[in-house]
Amino acid sequence: MTDPRLIPIAGSHNIRDLGGWPTPHGETAYGRALRADSLHRLDAAGMAALRERGLALVVDLRRAEELAEAPNPFARGVEGVDYRHISLFEDLDPTRMPEIDEEEPLLGLYFLALDQRGPVFVEILSLIARAEGGAALFHCAAGKDRTGMVAAFLLLLAGAEAEVVVSDYAATRPRLPSLLAALEADARARGRELNAVYLDADPEMMRALLIHLEDRHGGAEAYLRR
Image (tube, rainbow, N blue to C red; front, side, top):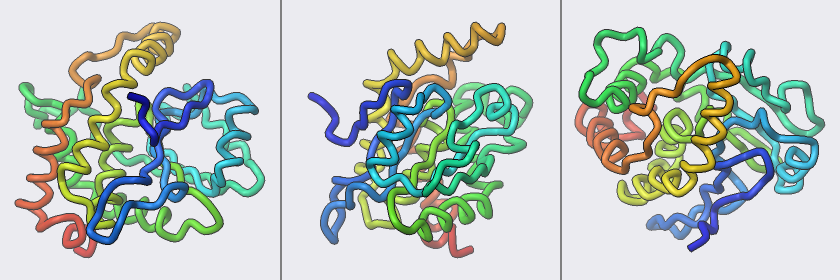
């Protein structure tokens, strides 16, 4: 079954709308928040396609070195689109952090981001909340981890249940074959290999993250207010 939230654009593999998810107040609106993988493969037609969907804000969550290797085409300046770079996992490189759990390194990274990057989450979500005149798109490299955490906050703040957030996170799984092929091609071009530990979108990772958010921080709203 085709994902109704998937936005197929050449050069991208995981652009999805956050609309259509159930909440106690009705479904989340389409055309307000978009989650995505890296945009560096987009050509002029792909950028135009996003503009036609009302794109007004791009929040790039990648590290500075990722931008240097794969520049964001919207960073050059596109009329009507506000581009912002905010590195969400800055100083949380899992390959250089001994406190990451070796058995669940991805989940450990998620926990560290929650515990240490609160002000950055607030900055990102505030930007999205203030976006005017169209859609806000936020993205990282795969559109899974950093992007998935921001999407989780947006859905929770909208009133979505935890399992809705889990479903949104897991919707990356069908995109993985094409996404990983693109990421592997990028890695080979730079003489690197992908670390398979960080490449799945296991729904249990998001379930565990949401439990951590609730138990340690009192939930999304309490976390962001603090």
